[in-house]
Length: 251
Image (cartoon, rainbow, N blue to C red; front, side, top):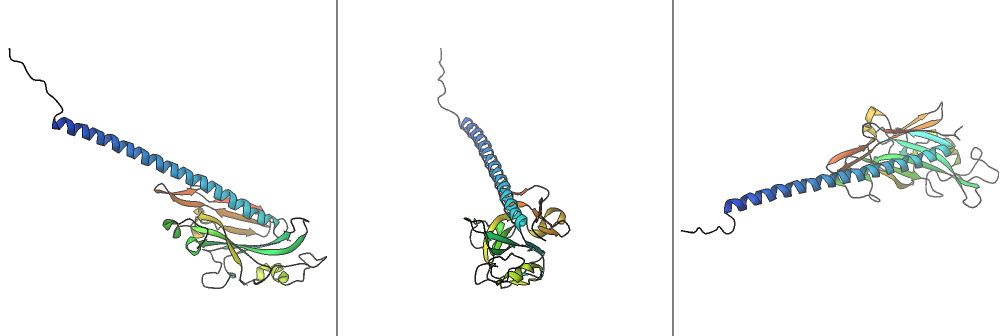
C-alpha cells in the first residue's frame, strides 16, 4: 500500500494570509495608540486652560477690587514708545492704580500704575513655549508696571499724612487723572497669561475688558485657545468666560 508523505511547513499563500492578518492587527493597535495619545493631549490642554483662566481672572480680579482708579482703553492711550503699542479694539488695555503697602507694617508707601494689554503672541520673546501655530492664532495678556524712576509717570509716593487724593509727589496727579493720560513710557512688561483667543475673535463679539461707571465694575471676558491632539481646543467651548468685578475703592 502506497503511503503519503505529510506536508512540512507553510505554503506561500498561508504565509501571506498570516502577514495580512498581522498587518491589520498592527494598524488597529497603532490607531488605538494614536487616538489615546490625542485624547490625553486634549485632556491636558483642557486642564491647562482651566488653570490659565483661573489664575488670570483671580489675579486681575484682585487688582480691580483694590484699584483706586480704573480705565478701559481701546484708543487714546499708548503703552511705551514704538509702533503698534497703542491700545486698540484688537489690543485693548485695562489700566488700574493700586496702593503698594509695606509687607512688615502694612502702611502704604506708594501707588503703582498697572496696565493689562492683550497682544499678539508673536510680540513676546521671553517666557513662552515655542509653538508655531500659536504665533498667529492666539494672544497673550501682558502686564506693564510703572517704576520708582525712569517711567512716565513714576510711582506716586505720598508724604507723611497724605492720601492718594492729596499726594503731591511726582506721578500722583497723572495717576489721579488716569482718564486723561495719553502716553506711558518705560513701563516694565510681564507675561500674565498665554494662549488666549484674540480680542476681536471672542464668541458673541464681546470685548475682553469693559467698564460700567454706574456700578463701578469691570467685566473680564476671556477664552483659552490651543491646538492639541490635531484639534483646536477652546475653553469654554462655545463662549467666553465672563467675570464681573466691582472696583470698591474707585470714587
